[in-house]
Image (cartoon, rainbow, N blue to C red; front, side, top):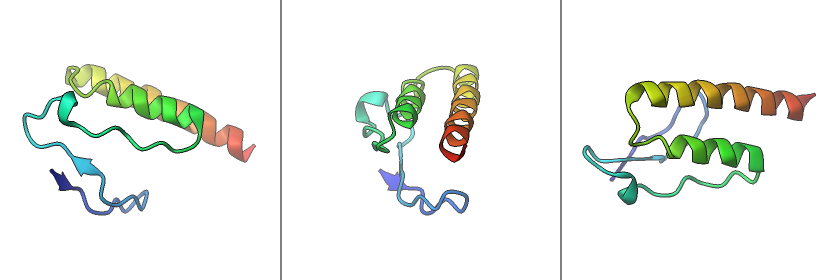
Length: 76
C-alpha cells in the first residue's frame, strides 16, 4: 500500500491509497476525528468504496453538504 503524500488543501499526510483491484476488506478503517457527526460522514464515505462511480459522487456531494453544515454549527 502506498501513501498519497500531503494534501495541500487539508495538510493531511500519509492517507493510505488502496492498490488497484483492492476490496474494502483490505482497506484500513478510516481514522476517528473525535466529532461523532464527522465520524459518521467519514464512515458513510468509506462504505461506498465498492459502489459505482455515480453513487460515490452522490455520497461525496452529501458528505460535503453535511461537513459544511457541521462547520457552520461549530463556527456559529
